[in-house]
Amino acid sequence: MEKWFLVKLLTNDKGQDGSSIATYPTKDKALVAYHQTLASFHNASDVLFAVVQIQNYEGITTDSEIVDHRPEPTSET
Image 1 (cartoon, rainbow, N blue to C red):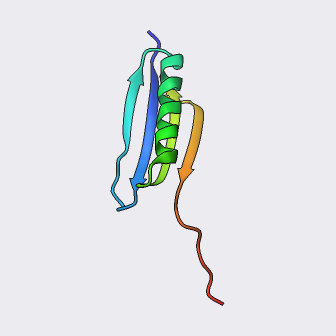
Image 2: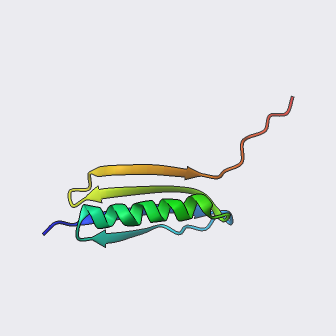
């Protein structure tokens, strides 16, 4: 039986961890959830930083994207 994992490593704007792992029976279903998750995270005002990955049953990452809403560092001169 084929298994695919959607790994979400998430920190919100309050510094709270919202990480999770979900299991899917096919890569196609995992890809749909992957793209829906990324769209949601990119549009969410409370997501500070996230890594979203699809992994196969051996733990090999096949797709990965970072969502980074951290403010740009400022330099004082």
